[in-house]
Length: 251
Image 1 (cartoon, rainbow, N blue to C red):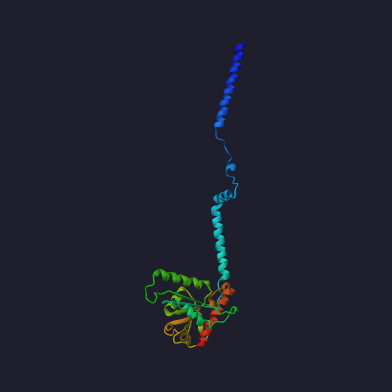
Image 2 (cartoon, rainbow, N blue to C red):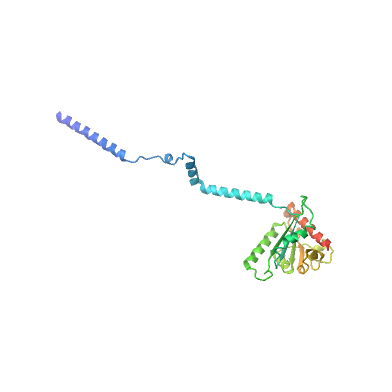
């Protein structure tokens, strides 16, 4: 009986020691903290850092999209409106002459948009080697691309060209209008209006420079019904045609 009690006490003591050992091991084992408890931000700075970490790319893409939309709208609503356009396409450069020519050409332009101002868009595009013949191939290609882009926008119809660029534009597929239907002026030669020795050239103070220059009007009738139905295209054509008619009447 005493042996059984002694054995019982030994088992009880062994269990107690085992329990203590397990308790000590549990105390030494690092406490596992739930992930949500660790990542959950509390301060504004922590919340911002957490947001930026997870949504940085989405935020940057969204900001870029907003900037592009605002820029497009700003350009659309703040760009000037013109009563006519006059595009110079030559082998030699006319850079720097646009401002002077705008002043002269404004006397031939009507206030088509009725805003109390006469504004004409004069743009010069050189697609030849230039006056000194050293224009790089890259620049020429860029200017040709610029010209094709301008033509495709369908907002500029009146072009002043030299004979070489007249041929180039025809090779591009540009169709010019037969000007004999607009005027019986002797300077009219089919779809070209010669500026050589014209009163217009003298008024510009460029009579010698205009010896090999012509005015041409892109043919509105080449467009399909969809383009013809757009007021922006119709108005641009009519405004440029009025400018050409005023120049031809001046001569």
